[in-house]
Length: 138
Image 1 (cartoon, rainbow, N blue to C red):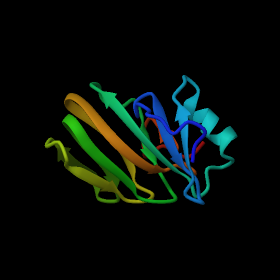
Image 2: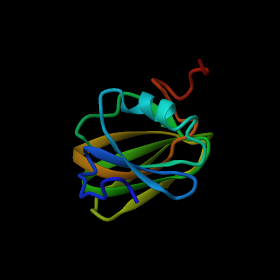
Image 3: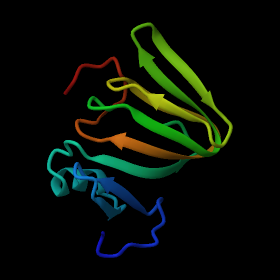
């Protein structure tokens, strides 16, 4: 059990599930994502559970090479855009309670139609972000 079992607010304190299924609350800070790498090694076998709110298009595309990502709409209306071999595939998510499974290794971004809040269950190891999913790896 965590030192402090809560309650927590998911927008402020994310939850990390370790490979042994221990749940570790982690405060969101400006350097949150960098801290995940330093606090949890390469994040192998870990899962990040988080909630994000946004009303603008995401600045980047992202990919999770080590597992599928579960994305659940809490409120709002957004397009989740998947970059596939056939081109962009747009999935409209507009009913609270609807969810999408982003397949492992698929670049994706979001383009909201209204202010949106989503729950993410993310296999974080190896996550990358790019301005354009077609650009070469850095």
